[in-house]
Amino acid sequence: MSIGQVAERTGLSVHALRFYEREGLLADQVRRESNGRRVYTEDDVEWLDMCIKFRSSGMPLDTIRKYTDLVRQGPGNEQDRLALLRSHQDHVTSQIQDLTECLNVISHKVSVYQEHLEAGTAECLWVGPSQPSTSEAS
Image 1 (spheres, helix red, strand yellow):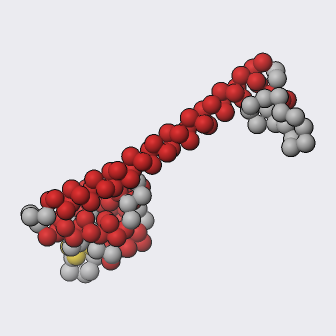
Image 2 (cartoon, helix red, strand yellow):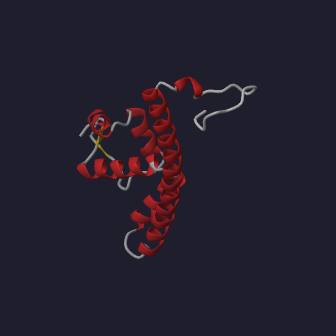
């Protein structure tokens, strides 16, 4: 596949694909044709998809690079790979818990606003600082 095709499939820009390659984030060296054009394989796309998920979940580039280096080294370092992945899993789990708490607060506020709008009492939802509050909604 060409770099344009991979960009389309992964949602990464051509610039980002070149960056990933330059930063050593691809498990295998990207093959090049005789004219210098990059030729990506299905394995490259699968690896990129995994890297995209890692980045989307907040994994730093240095950690992705370390994981990639461990994979390139081959068998024998599976415990190191597992430790790296577990550490990030713990981080993502914590993020999900934090976001769940945020969502609960937002959902409560939505519910309060919806109830007041349906009851025709929405005017009490915002009480200025100098006025006494008659609602928990602010």
